[in-house]
Length: 322
Ligand code: NAP
Image (cartoon, rainbow, N blue to C red; front, side, top):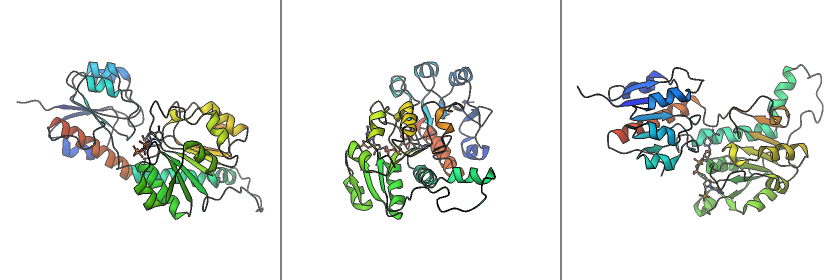
């Protein structure tokens, strides 16, 4: 009897999603949903796996690709793939796939929720009432900043950046964006204006980071960048923590160089509980939940499984990282 290829999944995922793939693969997975697989278990499992479905919590490096001698494909449950050493994967002849597109709208929803919540002090207001501090109404009680008719500056006008811009259109916002290249079509459709990075920092009331983590974007939001922003501005980061110098962000908040921040991603995840960003009332921190709706996470898992199946059965992946 011909043995089925082995597929290893680095977290516990719903059996229902795996059902259509069970007859083609021997599927095993890590036993917990909320805890990442220990490195030594991953190395053992990968040694005879043909495909791996991994999370951004796994560092897929040279050692992994050297250990996986039968490995043909690594499917990352994320659009970002900064956790994967692409060079090592290529050397080992392993195809890497990600999940672009299926998470775009959910991530833009989260970005906009974070933007609104930060500007209108929603978390602080919720805390205020729960701590029984609401004794009377007053004119400027928990007054925040308007979002409608303000200027949004989107750094990284890709799939998610554009989806955020469409939401901003509905709020009557002026839309500025910065990329390495201009997107003339989007400018026409969304009414966005291309500006250089410094002009965006200078003019935007809300600066939103949606760039991928790359050597070029590493710490692009540094001391100088925060100093160029308006003192009344709000900084939102839903891309990756590495794009921000967190010490500079803390300092900018403490010096009043910017007014608030909404963050879904951090330099180190999970963020340590004594991190100075966590004790600031003008900062909202989320545990990297940009694409975390039930529907979208299921679509992402489905796409990963189809990518693995495509590579192993020779029909090709749908969304290969090139
Ligand atoms: P995308 O379509 O590839 O868009 C990325 C954009 O960033 C592109 O328009 C690109 O334009 C621009 N860019 C790249 N390098 C740049 C640089 N050095 N300076 C300025 N702009 C630069 O990707 P996406 O699907 O929108 O996703 C974007 C990122 O969001 C992902 O890489 C991921 O890290 C993050 N993300 C986070 C979550 C979450 O849970 N928080 C969820 C999904 C995605 P040019 O090439 O023209 O520069």
